[in-house]
Image (cartoon, rainbow, N blue to C red; front, side, top):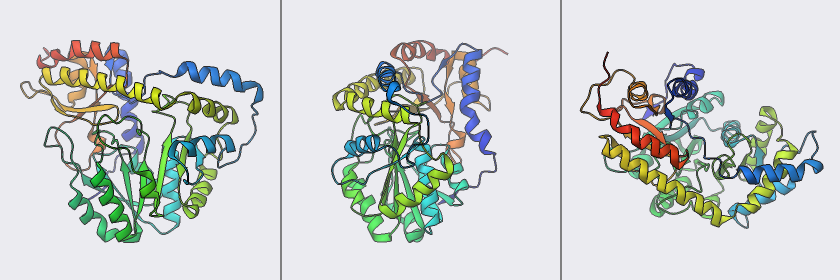
Length: 384
């Protein structure tokens, strides 16, 4: 079991995204370092904003969200789910939930490692200790040791929060039905809380959907989501949190202190987009992402990278070819030598690890094709 003890400033941890993007622009590299979705629904967003502009106001909205948007989000999950609290993005949903749980006596959050690099900062600002369970990356695909998860969770009891992201960032792990059943049993046995980071919910290429209804029946499960990935609107900053009444109230109070409310115009537009982009279209987008994933996997493997095959999400994790020397920053070497920008995953681990890089396939098919054309240069040592 690991306690997150990084002394690096949060600005440095999250700044790696900006740094790699700036280097990609400077050196005309194909930027696969960020999880910005391909803008496939921009037409729908523009039309919705145009249609709603005459009806929108520019004052406070209810902190929990407008009735229209709350109903639309609840409809994504099914009958009987609690009305969501609307937030300024999924990250704020996670923060609000953790603030609410901390206020209710929880003091430790447990997640899977590698982890989304914003998680430690969220734990820190909410005053929680952070621990992690390693995902097994030794095989062709990521795997979770459920026995180890159970052993790490048991001592936390009612003080613990299990934060799960499936599909997982960055590994692409998708939990199976038996694993979800085991998670529910752990929540009921130990009395811990389950917080689901659901932002990649519509990007599963294999494996079942999250059994939301069964998990919510525990009375100790909350679901954080948003429009960022599924609806290709990372900059809109609209999220939601579905939680039992007591936690929902505490989380809404936290949200009031963080951003208070989301703009009326954006909420109105989101209601239209959520209605127009139906399940069939979401599945079509996921199918296109899967084809890009397969193309990138083939290119990385053919260029000598060791890859971990993701079952969901936007990313492929890979280790650079072993048949050439790499400097202390393989991601920078790869960018300079091959013109492909990946994200170094140092800030996604607390344990010593191999030099994993994260490649996003959320870009256009043309960008994936260009990256595939350039990747073989990774085997060539740069002249110095």
